[in-house]
Length: 451
Image (cartoon, rainbow, N blue to C red):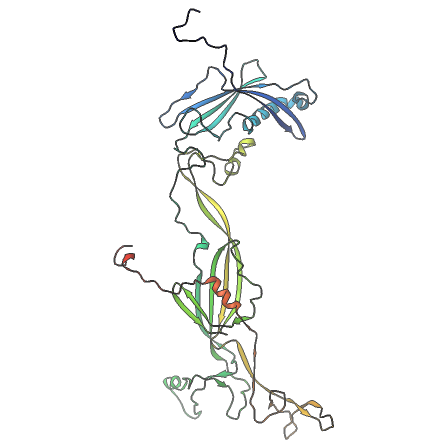
């Protein structure tokens, strides 16, 4: 070689490239053995380095891998796997590509290579280096420059947020309806004008005479002070208040198993969007409560050239993948944003209440065919005796508060199946809003034009 031009220096014998040693363990059923590989990064050779394109540039990243396994040692892969050695060698090379300790990037990984943007590994080619060389392999990672300007997967392009509201962000659904039905008398009613059974009346007259004379209820009994033996059913008002609301799991405990048989101990005002409904105390009883687990599919955007936002693998999303490829997190290799549904568990709570304007008690005439009486002896023992009339037949009489016969009292004894409790009001509060103001549209809301 002649003299070099002024300012040039002679080349060295060769540049030292990085070398990596990896031990890859593979198994064939219950049989296990290890391969030792030595990887030379960016090995020299006659191969395409880059292909520049209109939309994206492509690159190749070559590696030379030597099988340096000691096949003279006990338990080496050739002796261990026997006829299945070639299959296990390929399996070990595939595991080398996917190993976190290996320098060879696997399909789906992002690397910085020959471009200003991050590039994604599309595929990896594995071949023998020479026709008769069985222990040296050439592995090439095929890389495509991403079209995104992001510098990494975590720095994704910004997109607009969804306007979709989750179920638990909606206010409670609310309904209140009232119906009139015939029911048994509860012992008291409003008095109206008496009618003469010898006369006839028009419907207008019946409506007029049927108006209540006042706001006080009286016992349903005849003018002799005795209750009717079989009073007819009287129209009664019954209402139902219903709530339904969704809650995100873990927010609060809203259902109590001891709600049965409770009636509101205080006045309750239900406010929904500014509208108010008033329930006096002792008129609203818990009828039912319930919780239903539900699933809401939240929409998530899967951006181009990024990994699946939920960490789904190719095997979970698509058919046709197997082995290590199936276990890799899927990458959106398209230029489109894909909508992904993320299931979110929540609960829907419901409650219903029964409304009765007169309350939930009944009053029965305190009468009976037996009464307490004193025996004519020194101890004045109290016994319960039947009460005969003048003909010796049993007769029903009024009793006082101690069970003795009385001619001056007409006591009606009351009963109920409901206990007053503050828990009724607390349960209603869990569903209602604190807002009790109706907000009307203003000029700022565009009430006189298009909103």
